[in-house]
Image (tube, rainbow, N blue to C red; front, side):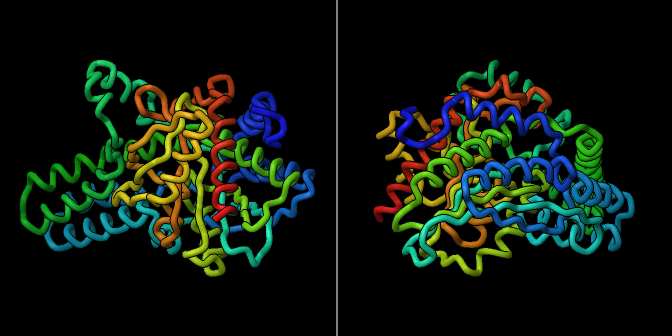
Length: 393
C-alpha cells in the first residue's frame, strides 16, 4: 500500500489487532470498556472528536435462547393447551431474539449491563450524502458448536458441495423450530412432534449452556480486524477530511450479544439520518484469506444487501486488483442487518477461507498470528475507494 493513501500499513494494522486481542473483551464487560477507551484514545490522538454513548444491554444470547429452548422442552412435556401456549410463546421469543427484533424477553425479564458505542463524525453536516462505516470491537464466547473442523471435515469430503456452496447452514432455525414443534405437537396431540420439539430444544439448551460457560476468545479476526481497518480509515480521514460527503465512523460494543450495540446506536441516530441519502458499510471479520461482500444475510429471514452498493464495491475491487468473493449469503447476523431492517442501503464486507467460511470463527485459535493482514489492508483500501466514489456522486 502506498504511503500517500494515508492508510495504515500491515505492521501498524497488526499492532492494533494485537492490542485488542490481548484484552478479554466480552460484550458489556470491563474488558470491552477497556477496548473502547483504547480505541477512543487513538482517535483523540488524531484530533478527532469522539462521542461516547453508554447503552443498557443484556450482553449475551445464550441465556435468552437457553430459556426459550428450555421452555420448548417444558412445553413438550406439558402437552395440551398449556403446552401449546408455552411453546408458541417460546418460539416467538426465540424468533424475536435471533432475528434482530426488539428483544422483548431481554428487555422485560433479563439483567442489564452497560456497553459503549463510539462515534466520530467528519465532513459537512449539510452534505448531500452520508456514509456510516461500522465495526464492532467486542469478542465472542466459544462453544463446541463453533469447532472449526465440523464444517470443514464435511466440505473436504464433498468438494463439489464446497464449490457450489453459496449459503451457510441455518444454524439458528432450530432455536425457533424446537419450541414451535412442541407447540404444534401439543395442539395436534402428536407425541412424535412433541418428542421432536423436545429433542431439538434440549440440544439448543445444552449448546447455549456450553457457550455461556466458555471463555471469551481473543477475537483477532472477529473483529479486531474490522476495528483496525476502521482505524486505518480514521487516519486517512483525519489527514484528508472528506469534501462533499459526511462520514460517520462507528465502533459498536455488544455485537456478539446479537447486535445490541448497533440496535442501540440505531435508536439514537437513525431518526436524523435520511434513508435516501445515507449508506451503511459494516466491516466484520476481514482477516481471512479472501474478502467477500455478502449478497444477503439473516439468521431467520434472509435480507438482501443493496445492489447499488455491491456493484460499487465490486467496481472498486476490480480497479484496485482485489479479489472479492461474489454471490455469498450467510445465515448469520452482523451489525449491517440492523441498518437493513431500518430501511437503509447497506453492505457487509467480511472474509472467508477456501471453504467459504471465516477462519477461526468463535474459536480460541482466533489469534493475531493467524490473521491475513493483507486482507485487512485491502478492506480499508476498498472502503476508502467506495467513500471517494460516493463523494463524487
